[in-house]
Image (cartoon, rainbow, N blue to C red; front, side):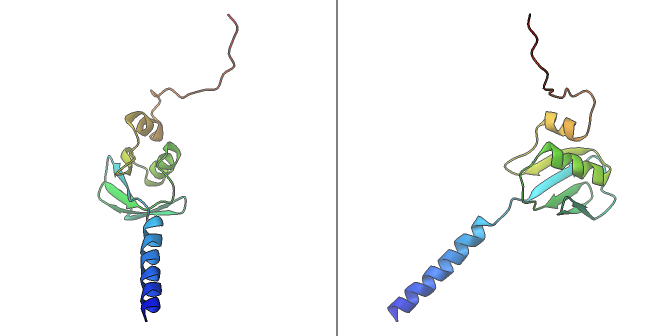
Length: 113
């Protein structure tokens, strides 16, 4: 009976640890105006919106590209984007919103002086 209890305890513990390994961060996106739709699907991620705040559980990290896709889908300017632990910076948000005052990095060949 003791071996049975040990096996059961091992199964329960491993199931709990596996669930934690697959947990994903909740992303929040803040808009400068209320979202027009309560649900937006962007790049296979479902965003639930309430007013100017939208939340989702994407399976990737916060990026300017993902933010830009979200901004295009909602038609609004994004004022915050990311998880609690990884928010986009002000410069990244400006690029997300396509603001022309932000300088893009370009790969240009070096010239000899």
